[in-house]
Length: 87
Image (cartoon, rainbow, N blue to C red):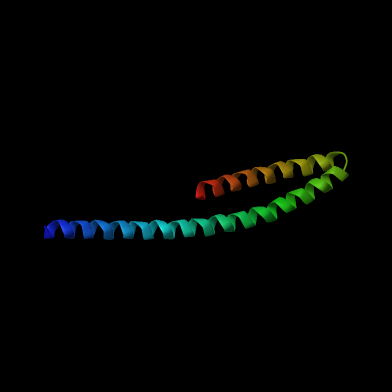
C-alpha cells in the first residue's frame, strides 16, 4: 500500500514538473511570437509605404519597386507562418 502511495505521489510530481516545463515553453513561444509579430508589423508598414510610392511611379522604376515588394511580401508570408507554428 505504501508503495502505491509513493508511486502515485511520484506520478503526480512528474505531471506537475511536465506541466511547469510546458507552461514555460508556452510563455517563451508567446514571447517569440510577439517579437516576430512586432518585426512583421514594421515590415508591413514599410511595404505599404513602398506600394503607395510604386503606384505613383511610372515606367521601369515601378517595375523595380514591384520586384522589391514581391520579395518583401514573401518575407512577410514566411514570418506569419513562423508565428502560426509558434502558436
